[in-house]
Image 1 (cartoon, rainbow, N blue to C red):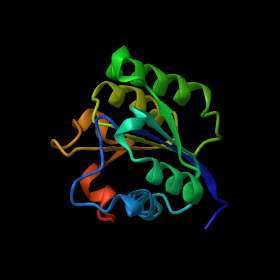
Image 2 (cartoon, helix red, strand yellow):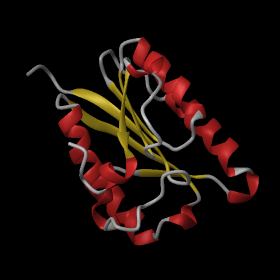
Image 3 (cartoon, one colour):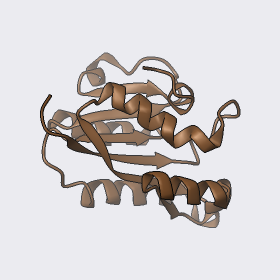
Image 4 (cartoon, rainbow, N blue to C red):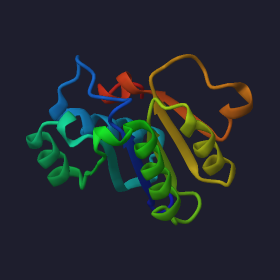
Length: 160
């Protein structure tokens, strides 16, 4: 086993909300556990979420921040949540992710517009993971440089 490498996690809480059958108290721990199975030499350096702060109870935000360094970037729902969130996430991905190869980049989002962006990180040598609602396999021409996991399974601590 080599040295530990950083992993940045970027979560779109609007398109991948807390599944009904998952205890929200354990959601972040579950996701990190699944990621540690898929990326064993990586540790979570960043854990950013994007969306309306009203979508997640305050006590959960505090718990996740205290336990995992989780940070929520509030995006006002009246400014076009999808476009603004996507823009904020892409800027953070590009500007706040200057980690050395082969660091890991994890994006949790149901927005298909991010797939090409994540693919670009995979092509350049990052360990790129997309966690999304399972809608079928990633097209073959996109599958190799990125790993796709199902959101409901990862949130529940499954998918190992």
